[in-house]
Every structure is written in structure tokens, then in C-alpha cells.
Image 1 (tube, rainbow, N blue to C red):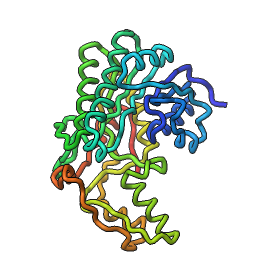
Image 2: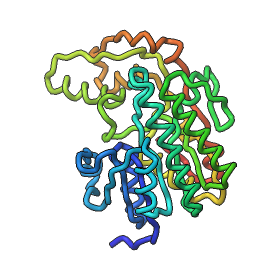
Image 3: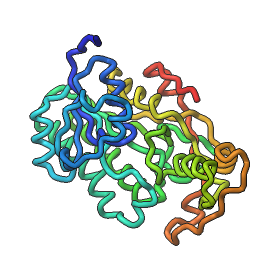
Length: 305
């Protein structure tokens, strides 16, 4: 039986891909794990069930945009560490729901920070940033000093949340970190994301379906890593002596076309779809790759593909 570490963790957004893997990782470390969803009674626990840990989690209802809701849960759980993975995570959806995206991500982060400021405790806080904060980096790699030039409402919301974390860390001395994570994938990824969209369609076509897979630009280069590695990086950030923000990724960028070919055994199953007008080629192109040098030095993590 796993020995208890004595620590309590609260994961906001535990039902998502990252939340489920992080919960499993922390349970293996001996943490008592609590999680939140907007409505605990109606929450879909597919990821937690798939990992066999649903019964080990205490789930709470919490609306990130409601300060009283956030404060009540944090005060009740009294965690040692909080991981904020809540808020919608689709770049495409943020163009059709910009206000909800900004409110859920930025205001949700602010409510957690403000609660921690008022409690004046020693809680360590991790905030999920995103590579979308960088926008188009051209041919250069992005690191912690790279300027933010977001190209989507989702990226703008993440920049706002990261700025709030920095402000509260510097103004009030909170142990608060942001992780700027590049794409991280797993079988728990929802099918609306391109990696699962490709693999799921390839499986159906391989089983006899005559459908065609619609994709956008196949020349886009993205850095894809393994989600369970990335949740370890989240945890390691909160074990540092001093809080800081870190970029996390594999360091290797690939195009969508080779991924599609590998999934389909080079069968011509795809066709290019026309993106929404708001998703212009200028907004979607770019090499989002980065350096792991600082993270390796600070927390001893090497992401291996």
C-alpha cells in the first residue's frame, strides 16, 4: 500500500486529460487528492475511470468565475498544493466563445490567487499556461524570455492569467508558478484535438469506414509530447525552492502531414478543410518549439519522446 506523504493536493479541472494524469501521479506519490468540476454530480469521469482512480478522488463542485465558490472549496480542502488546469482548452472554440474563454481562464485564475492572498498561508500554486501565448515564433525557438504575441482569444486569456500569477507572486510573495506547456497528447485527449482526430479516424477507416478525414494546413509544425511526462513537470515546479515560470515541451517540432501518414499507413484518407475566417493562415502558421534548458537545470526534468 502506498505510504501517505501527508500532503493534500487540489486539482481544478481534474476531469480533463492533464487533471486525470496529474491525479494518478500525485496518488502514486502518496498525496490525498481532491478535484473540482463545475458540477461534481454531473461531471464526466471517463479519464479518471480509464486510469482506475475515480474512487480515490474527492470531487467538489466549483465555478472558477465565482469567487465565493472558489474560496469555499479552497478553505474547505485546505490543500498544500493547488493545480489550476480549469477552463476550456480549445483554441478553435475560443474564436466562437471569446468571452467565456477569457472569463473561465483569467477570472478563474484571479479568484484562486485572491483567495490565497487572503488566506496568507503557504499553499503552492501551479497555473497552466500554454504555448499559444507565444503565437508565431517564426523560425526561432521560444523560451521563458520570448515575448508573448498570442494569435487567438485562448492565447490572450492565458497571457492574462500568467500576468496575474506573476503580479501576485511579486506583489504578495505567493508561491505561484505558471507552466507554458506545448502540445501534450495521450489516449485521454478529446477527439476534437488533431492527434486524436487523426488516430480515431484512421482506426475507423481501417475497420471499414468510407469517411474522409478533414484537416487544415498540413504544413503547420507543432511540438507534441507525452502528457504523463508533462504532469510530472507541473509537480516538479512546485518542489523548487523559489517560484518561477517555465516552458515545457519535447524540443522537437513535426508537421501534421507525417503524423497523418503514420496513422493511416500512408493511405489517402484526408482532405484539406477550409478554416473559419478568423483562423487565417497568418494566425495558424509558425514553429512553436522551445528550449528545456532552464527547466532541466532547475528541476532536473528531461522530457523524452
